Image 1 (cartoon, rainbow, N blue to C red):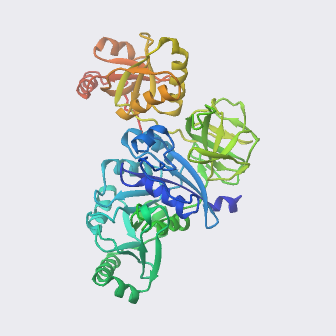
Image 2 (cartoon, rainbow, N blue to C red):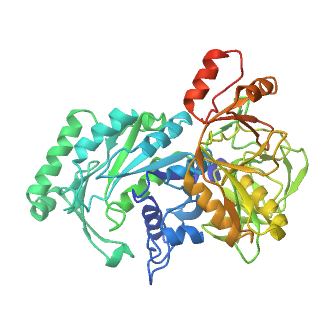
Image 3 (cartoon, one colour):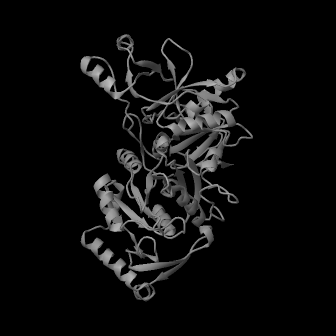
Length: 519
């Protein structure tokens, strides 16, 4: 058991939109031999879409709106790569994925550095004590001084960068990469459109000086400065979430990709004992346990099926085994289990701690549910976000009301939006979301996947707090407050502005108005 768990590396790739996260995902697959040719990030004419962007809407817009799992092998390691949406509107999906990861790769655009979404995602990594590797991307384009970016990383997110590789040449004129571990360099030859591995030539210090000239001198001087200030890699500090090994390159041209992939295999931790909801540790050798961190329907439109993504925390999974569903205490059969590779899947007979198993036709499961064998376990709940936008929704065609209700239930379970209902009033549902694009994805999938085109009301910015039954009558009399209920019974008070909330809190401190915790 320990041997199989020790071979696993399960990590998420996180970034601000357009930092190059999906491109890097494709290049990892290329260098691992999982694909013969890397796909284009955007579905331009004549090119296929990125392997991880399997949804039609993603291919149309060239952005990631849903997390994806891809399993492949590299150097006798089983790698479970979790690609996440970069757009802020889909932060909740990213949070769920981070709950299933043992480490994260943070991708930064070398021209932009730390952006708001980067800070927000790192705060989640820190809360979950995830070790983070950093990749300074797009150094083939004009950008900022890498030394300046190191200061920004430390100042803005409190993570001490420890560069392992360093660019030879300024941003926009990347000539090669210096490996600080042994003082050697790698010179690259670009491949056509970056579709195949870049040709790499390892150079010793003398050869690098002859090949790169003054640019090599500048790179060595920067490395000496890093040595002088103690910016060197320390495995213990990395695993503690205090320091981040940093790598440089260009995912588009494949410069530096191999360095980073090897670091994930060599430095990222193997699965460790998981903490349950009470804070007790469940060893990897314990009987099987896992939790659902994502639901996705219609990955295979021909079958209209549901897939539950289950992170294996302990024990040996065998297809066909009967587990216990923690939320209901009922038996759950695992006859249809798959290993995932984007939208593609293959039947899997065995899985070990760290692996992600796709349980097909798992309509009875919800995000956060535990599955276990023999010894009961419940894992910490996966948080939901406080909604910031609300909008009414109704079916365009009333004859499709049944499909409309089924679609609402399905997309709410997946976490695409939150579906709320007014307390004791209008039965028309209300959608709540973090950002506008969630509504657009909802409407697209309702029409094109579920056959129930919808009419959305104008999305309005709102301030939301949770409340209780005792406070509800008082809020009804306060005016301007809408009372809604979630599937789990939580009552939400929706205020037209933060100022109205502040006034009511000041006038009535005894009322229950709690911020919705997100981590």
